[in-house]
Length: 326
Image (cartoon, rainbow, N blue to C red; front, side, top):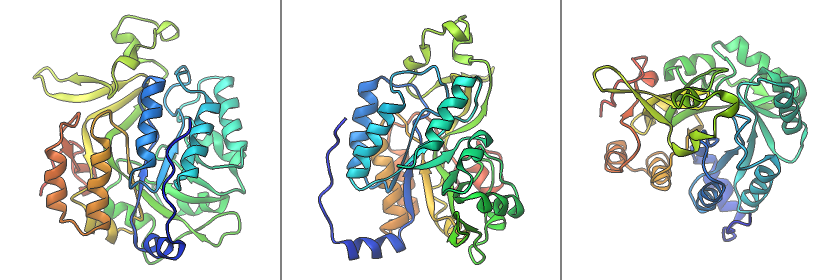
């Protein structure tokens, strides 16, 4: 799975730029895409402005286009291209096999691991790791407890507004993480994509096709951005993605640059979609790191044929589906 390598750059200049950057992260691929589509997608990510790429199957262990060995091969290729790579563990474990896979991911020492749920924490304790968005952190004492275990970064739960995030991890009073307790913990927010709202032991995509979960025929591969669910009035409301329920609209913080900075956010998570994701990354990088006016960035995103309307209600302590006011 060899990917194109980036040209070498001056190390001093890179270090200085990194200090000033809001780091752009590509979240784990939440959908089930064909193997060739996945490889092609990450080849483009290798040439993108993204700083960090999180890899791995986090939704359904039945998805088998790529196995752990394939994710590791992709991780090594992306690391060779200069990307920081994180391996994510599954968010909902349903079997002993799922638990073994989580232990294998958490047990490797080649890449930083993102804990999808509490099951990974025992293996990761005492090592540097990332807290995924589905590990509940709603208070400063909770974050301090995870930092003591080794968390060096937390991805805030998607429903938290920016003011609440700032109260949990104030910009002027950073929690120390890492095994030695000296590494400041970083705050990452879900900044683009369909919000991952819930998981269930049932597969809603299979149920839609009147199939059992164990004989689902992998029908979710037919829906590269999930399957829309509308209200009785015909308004897109949710998206079904196997065992995961998502928002139909795309959560988007491109207009929240100053509020995010004031909240101490140092990293943005952009969740992959099947169309124009390269342009999405470039828009966010332009706004957060290259001085583009957020209104221009928002207009550029709205001009793209993305798979949903742009909203940012949760970030403003409002209903999640509230449109961006900009």
